[in-house]
Length: 172
Image (cartoon, rainbow, N blue to C red; front, side, top):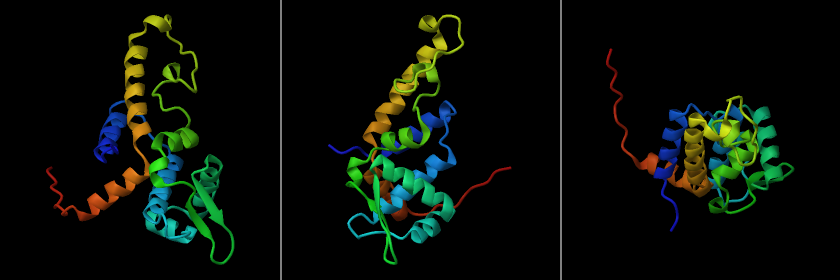
């Protein structure tokens, strides 16, 4: 059964709770993949199109897309009719793989990371209550991000486009 787009909301709530934050590079990588996912099967998408749709500086986007090529998530075609496209179906590109590639660890602190472990400064790592809680947070984030794919981002975008706009309510 494919994951539901609601997992993306859960992920964002978790990230906010522990003050984990994607860098601009990581956010732009996901936004570029969203555009490529929305055009999957349509051929290549010009870098100018991605840049304009997502308000990403073109030079920075070029670097990010080249980095995503090394991950195997995108491929490019050079020339006047060139551009980028997903190298794999959008349901086969997980957000975990993209974020790990662009950001590094998914863990909120390095002492709970499986792939980027670093010893922390606490006196007894094995009995550290902060580490224990952060390990739970890491496991939850990894679980959600391993299930969430570029296809889920595209579905979430479709749902949000169809949702009625509500007026913002400001209270001072």
